[in-house]
Image (cartoon, rainbow, N blue to C red; front, side, top):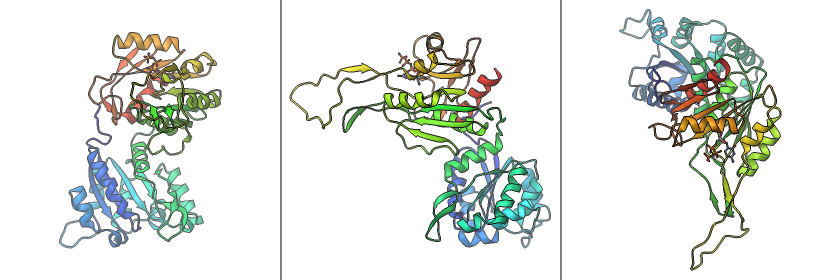
Length: 403
Ligand code: CTP
């Protein structure tokens, strides 16, 4: 049965190693718990210099593992017991030292021994964080290559301001990336889109009336971002054309930021011919003010008549240009005869598939992290229960590619 929480009932072991970024692990633990996971934490000695076990004990509501042989406890198989308990493991942050140990099969503390006991049967995500020069050292790069080849999911460090006081690569990936990487480790996507280009549109557009006022809608872009992430996880080259918003861009995706429906048309026009799959998840405005004032409008005594004109239907124009190998996915929000209207839209816009949002269902559509949709193509339709948008994205590609 589908759940509305991304890590519902999942048992996740978080390994923390000695790095200043260890404090950020607290946010991850809390986030995973909120998403339904049971979390157990193991820390290296080094990690306990940066944050206390008590902090992570309080957040995870369970004792933290630090010692291989804790005093006054029978602990001979603790590492195997924890490995057997886990559905997944994330090492956050991972130092060069621990990366080296895991890559080379060294178990000389509780954390590295437990990871060894997990072997290849449990998905493991590793999020390195360290100084720029350490990260690019030959040994660390070689060990990361070994871990990736062994099937570990690497959540690569980001570039930015480092604790040492200068810029470089080595910052722990942001929370959203950690979550996406762990999710990906637990739901390895088939590399079904290797060599393909997927263009995704997401979010609302803004249609300006004057320099400070615009018409827009409630779309945040979460669904489109989830689709971009899933396409990337399946091996595609992904271009995400997105309207204004505050979402963190998914990893590895080329971003094109736009504002108006016309900007979205221009961007789509640029990228469409190179796409194998075009997913139109954006809530593009259908109308814009006929006149855009170049100064801020002052209020008058009387009502202000607002004349609107049609924007271009980006998806329909792309659909009309579709070549044989291209697949198009559109979205529809319908309140009357939803399936009939969605099918009509699918034909009118030359789509291969349409995703019908059911706005009246709780947990659906705008602003939520979950959605309730019906997937429709020429031959069939499938009603999905409420589920996280990342899961919806997975179902969309399954439906398109495998029927
Ligand atoms: N769409 C688009 N350009 C527009 C309007 C919509 O590309 N100017 C795309 C949306 O991204 C979506 C699909 O068309 O994938 C359907 O959008 P929707 O708003 O449901 O339908 P409309 O065609 O605008 O029709 P209506 O609002 O009358 O239902």
